[in-house]
Length: 394
Ligand code: LMR
Image (cartoon, rainbow, N blue to C red; front, side):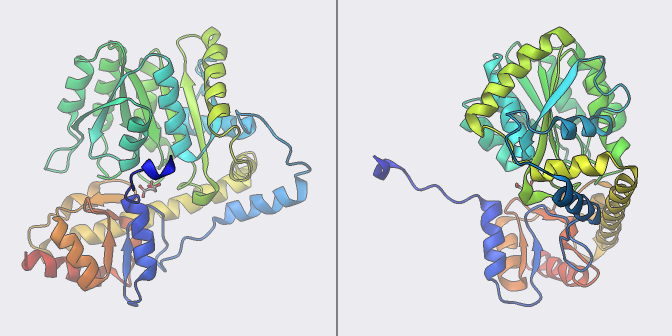
């Protein structure tokens, strides 16, 4: 039967990792997959993680199974950072550990489908895997515009979607550092979204994969908290892969806001059953290291300092790109200066993106998305010169 299968093209973003590795040019620039890099181009393990891992080696006395919910110490330790004061909202919020943020997104929509969701409204462009996960679950994806051409979020588009919603609809929102645009709703935008969601049958599902890489831990959670405080029910998918640098360890969490605490055990029994049937139990190591950091104030401070350094480097690169606006005729780099997180979109066509790769060894997603962290003091001038070259000759 297996010969009936049709070949699938490899995931374009992951294929780029291999293409970059195979390129032998020394001045090649990787602006593809979303991993943080230092000004030296490295993606080191956080010092706080190294400390926590050493402690785990010493103290961990068993690797016996924990269960589909994973390490609840980890799940609970994150909650004040995500939800702020009164992090359980009186017992209305509870969670479980997942394999990465992707596992959390998958679980959120599998649960939503089980609860009767059939359509998901997705602001586009979005992280390409969102649409793949939704399609794999057999959910209808209804796109709407996330951003306007002037580099601002399109608040009217999302509000219109909320106002027209019916039973069985869900809305996928990026909590902060929108992937791929870097364009987030303003605080007032989030408050208006929250107000309208409160009167709508729509289920909000908020994906938070970059907390702390935008304006700060608290600032990056403000939009999510506006929604959580306004609506009866919501689902949250959370990733520690970027803000703890744990990418390949796959560290994520999934949270439910229930109408009342009494509904929680039934909801979570469904999430547990779905997790059991999908991955059985999440990987432990990375979550245990995060728990170890968050229960030690010194390690927590070290982690927050490391995160602040990442944030200020991203901000500095953004400012340098925005300042190069007049060097790269017509590409409009200025908005990158005020956007958030790892990503931004360049107004390049497919041919320009191909020429950047073939003639200048600059690798980026086919959508024109760049990973801001791939730019360093050493390569940014080469990058803007390459942009100028393809912009001029187009
Ligand atoms: C990205 O968008 O580059 C990251 O979220 C990595 C991934 O899994 O796609």
